Length: 74
Image (cartoon, rainbow, N blue to C red; front, side):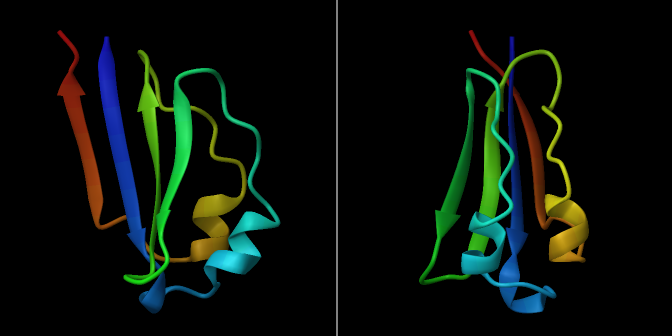
C-alpha cells in the first residue's frame, strides 16, 4: 500500500481556504483533506494504490503543489 501526501501553499494561489472548503469533493475511505490555516497550506493525505480524484481543487488553487510525496506503508 502507498501513502500519498500532496500540499499546496495557498498564499500563492487564486483562492482561499474558505472558498476551497465550499468545493471539496467527497474522498474515498482512507483519504482525507488536510489544512493548516495559520500557514495557508492545504492538501490531501491518501492511502491506496492511486491518488483519488481531486475534482476541481487543483484548478481552483491554480498553482502546482509544493509537496508531492509517496511513502510505502509497511
